[in-house]
Image (cartoon, rainbow, N blue to C red; front, side, top):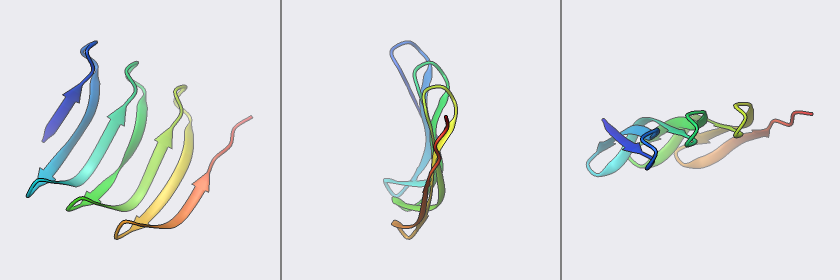
Length: 79
C-alpha cells in the first residue's frame, strides 16, 4: 500500500500497485483532509464506480468505468 502526503503533512492519496500499475481502491484527498476522489483500478485501468467531491465535501460527479471506458456518467449539481 502506497501513501502520499502534502507538504503540510496531510495525506494526499492512498492506493496499491501491482506490477508497477495502480491496482485496487485509490483515494485522494484535498490538502484540508476532505476527500477529493475515490475509485478502483484494475492493473492501471479505471474500473467500476468513481466518485469526485468538491472542496466543501459534496459529491459532484459519479462515473462508472468498464475496462477504462466511461460507461455511465452523472454530474451532480447542488444549489
